[in-house]
Length: 501
Image (tube, rainbow, N blue to C red):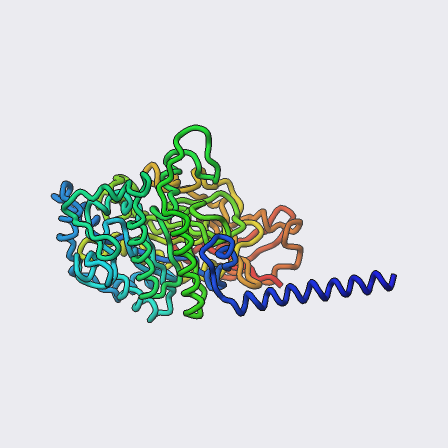
């Protein structure tokens, strides 16, 4: 018996020594290699968990194309007409803050070939073209003044199909936008030339090195999710028999090289960084997935994000850029979406598209100010919270999950929540029950009955955020019964703050 015990102790010491040695090696050798196994060792930074609401802005020559009389102009003509004469980074970030956003940033690059920063690699940048200003740099500087993490997004889906025919390159390739450069689309054994991918990599890493973003959000052109979604297969990580097997995406070696560059820069900068990408664009566990203009059903095990368009999709051309045809979503709708996503371990990145001159429409600002007013009262139930073991109760749930699920049918598929619908979040001892509509005289929260997760006497106090009224409540087997005051404390969802012992 003693021999067995001695052997066990020796094995334990050996295993512990190996584990500690490996841990020390990882600590001493802080470096990511350009392969998925190495990149999967990356951990989501702790600060990311508390971020629930951010704002970014699609702004570029596409905005000009939607102006009356410009419907038939070319992209090159639109670039020349894009002046942005009233752009002011301070006013943009002022609006972000007024809306209650915790983080923000620019769309750094969106398909047209014009990058929205002061680039040394190409003359096709927002300092030499369009508004003649460093959009990315000025916004990053202003955000950091307010202590707001910077997210930068790269949407290069059009890049693959248009760039060789429209814009010139100053590194690796030198294309004339007035000539047919379509050979670059097929010169790599029938696929896109590596010269194009080299130029893509060099531009994005230039932006990374120059502005040190905290988060990068890769949209179309990075992994090819959208074509797969539109074809109706390969969207869940499985290629079905029907349909073709085409996938237009950046090659894996470029994805790996890009992400490892960013992660290693984070180590150099001594800060945590995060990559956000569309579902299954890269292997799981390396970054955070995004659901484009959509939502998910049920509580999620891993943190996720949805980039939500503030405009409803009545017309799809240049959808994410300002288009007066696409009406603005109301603050109430956006708050409901934010609450539901937060309760499911998600967060919202709201696209707020400016006008061509760089200012924001009055109807947009009105709804953002209303969001900010709600968050000023109820933000503690959103910011820095984590999900509870139940995300909610009630009859209403997302019926069209996944990419673009909330954008279809002019946004009419966004759930319309009732007074029976409740969503939960928590922070420390505080549990928040968010009533999605005003319940009237009282509410019965069935999840919080005395035979459920909360035992009798677990509740110390209950208050209604924004209200000074003393609430009468009692916990029964059927649920937590709370009498509401006669006066509403805000205009949208209503938050019960439940302090536990």
